[in-house]
Image (cartoon, rainbow over all chains, first blue to last red; front, side, top):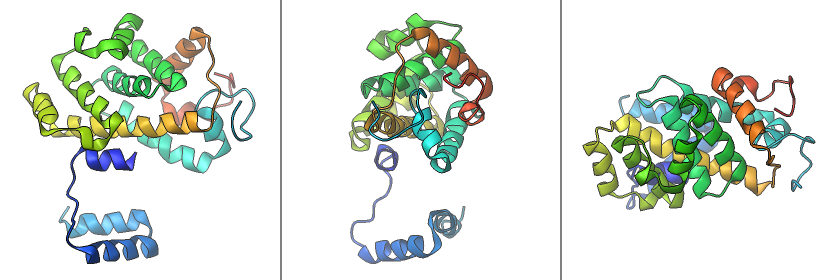
Length: 46
Length: 187
């Protein structure tokens, strides 16, 4: 489901910034998905 | 016969949902938001998207029950539902819904199959960003549910009246409310 949601809308996929994935991965692993998604939304000003 | 020990005689997605209510609850909440929440697309139109994707995935339980729910919302027009599953481009539905079903069909193959032209066609027919967003998510969600239902080899009743009666209750009460309701347990 998530694969189709992400690619069906042609969302932005950073390809040249592996550190970003490290950072997001650490956040998701330590905080869980609900909290990490909330932080991301806040960081994006939403 | 299901691949794991599911509650006996419980059809379709309800078997695994009773087996694992912790995951069933957020799934049903998402289904209620997407298919029954306030929206510029009618519940019947949104159910048609789900039924169409399920038919493309050959998930008999899902395309039959959601086709029945769509028909219920569309004044009992089962022929219209069948025509959408078979060839929606020539069905008696709006051009906007056709353009959204085209996107849903692409999502069913892979999200990466959706092209800017598919999205432009929908916009030309007046589709909003929210309608395009929800079409993609409904299509993706049904792909998940279809795989859940068939990956565990759940039971799909053959009697069309089972689906009509169940659809009437789903349309009236919603998905979260009746999944675990014990009255008429096989309904």
